[in-house]
Image 1 (spheres, rainbow, N blue to C red):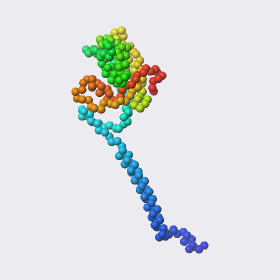
Image 2 (tube, rainbow, N blue to C red):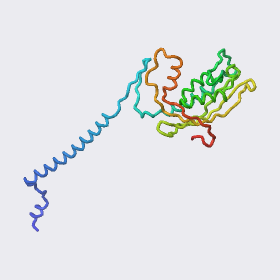
Image 3 (cartoon, one colour):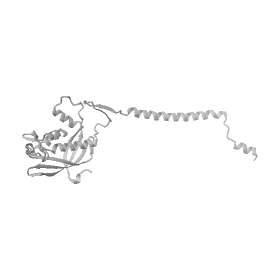
Length: 248
């Protein structure tokens, strides 16, 4: 083999003029593909950005303004659900004044069935109960739980929530919450207080909160209802529970 042949074989191939057009077309095609992919990615990104709900500014009647994030109509913050359960219990089972703390104000009560009465705070807390449950519960509270001596200032009581479980979803817009609490009832026979366990399972439902702001000259009744329902929650049912049934 001649040296000139080796040299000839070791040289880079030369492009013929007829090869330039196909190579240019291939490069152009590759560029178009890359550009198309980039345009599709940009289109998807802009579409997501355009369809993303923008923050909403809410301004209350008193002038306070804040932004809110969009959420499902049935969504409620877990802490709000827990607070509704705790607030209801405190309002319903706290009566009179703490022993040793003198007060001139005695709760005269509100009639709910004949001459049977409940405390004013328990009556207000009743608006956190669904309409078909409220009347039955308040009647039972008046006849079986709240003694008449409460309205003479001779009996007082307090409830101490010890644990409120995280809400568990039962259905869309319906949660289960367990409350572990202790009731303490004070009277002349036992000034130090009688301790009563209060373990209950609550079923809390999302409702439509008041849409219109509270009117300027709202009555006390309207203010109570508005304040209690503005969280968009009501209690559907309350059941006694035992230790082994308590939610973890």
